[in-house]
Image 1 (tube, rainbow, N blue to C red):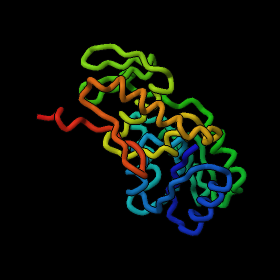
Image 2: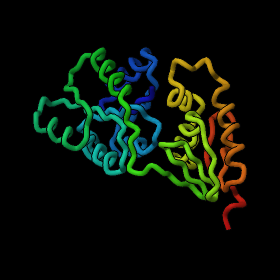
Image 3: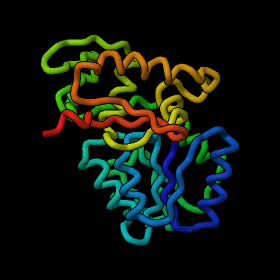
Length: 227
């Protein structure tokens, strides 16, 4: 599981980060709303935790942007005030849960795990395009210049992750965590195998999965594909 925590109280954010790591939850921690909003646009998180009061952009504004973009990633709100209106506003805007500070960290972990188990991959469009390829995320059908290639479930999940984050380097650890789950970290060669499968099926397309040594993989248009 991978979590994004947007919390401006740095001591609290650091303490929560260590708690997540002890519970084998990968976490990215940021302390302002603008950076939090930018990171929330990446489809690599299973749960996003937002403090309501943030510098630059509020947690509710980030939540609104997430939902307007058609993303259904579970969002948990943190607030320092036991304010009923804050809760109502957040839930009406699409929040999945909330906690009032101070809170018990064990309860937070339990809520995050519960949210992470929910099936949330519901998007506005079943077919997502990139360059001259398109992927039907429901059926696993890959079209390259109109030619059909049927992908396995893992291949489709991996390609979807790349297409939704074009030009972004995605690490092997992020891929394993999102697609195989943290229990499968021993399967270190799984990512290389499935990237190899996808490369073969994308061979005649205008896109390629590039290896960034020591960092991960990135989906890009081939240089000779552009005029």
